[in-house]
Length: 444
Image (cartoon, rainbow, N blue to C red; front, side, top):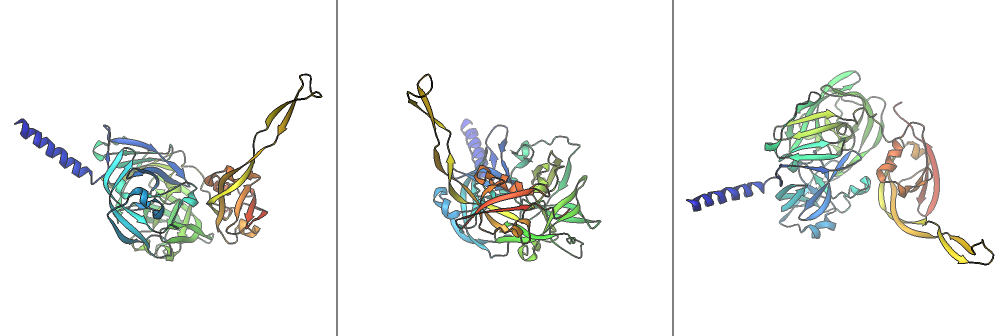
């Protein structure tokens, strides 16, 4: 009898082990884990371990497959196996990109682990989002994590909490709004409302935590989703299939039931960049990071619902880049830095009473520091009119060396108030030049 019982227990434990290989499970008694993230340009960057290698990934509700970039640099380290060549299509005007589909990889996010995860490794070494974020980003993770766990995204305190669905308990929240989710191609969609030209319009939006803007809308004259007369053409972002351009403007209101955001930023991407995305029946655009960060969010794919609770970012003014400049990390450069004065004590007969003469010796050192270059420049923007060009490397901003800033800090200086003076010293093919311009609020 004991042998039979032992056999039954063994079979039961093995069946659980096999089942757990097909999904993320939390390896602790609480069946829940909390990990910190970095919020870079409204995007969530989390630590992910793949086959024992620690990497940094974007947590992106807008992707259905985990993707690794810079494949040629990391393939040997990750020991990718069981591969099959495929092609992936994303936003942008370019063609599909070549990738390898790999099976049986071990993914670990905090205490959450999955033993046989598929991943898609992109061949193109030039497809790299890290320079525009200023931090290493090796890939994107979305649906596979969200489908298995209830994920709380606390934008206010920059952490996510992952909990196995059977162990999750909802708390009473009178100030929350709960929405039903719809899924297409393993991506979550939500119904909301926008107010354009005094007209309330219901919209179906992809929840896209991997987008840094506030809101993207696909123009549709029949629905009244059109930009007003006050807009400018701009670079909107970089997708899997290339750069995306379009119009930037404002809408009167954006509503998630009782939560209303006035004068929200909106972008209308060019139709050629979103032809693939528009094939989703009824989709009108995307709800992205600059709005999502104003809430603490609970994503519950198993029950097809999402919960929003506004946080301290809710009342932040919707700003935008008033310079026309997009910067990216562009390698490193040597910087001459002055070290602290070093006292050199020498005896002398004609010095002070103690016979000691102190000589201060100025010493310098050369260090490798990050270089930031202009990679996008909006036509007729303040920076463009001042004479700046793509490829210019920024040496200093308002008299302070550029390498003393992170890329995000530098970019935030372009979001400052209307009329703020920006002075840039740049390196253009070995020539050091000075430029200045005033930030302009196009929508005032």
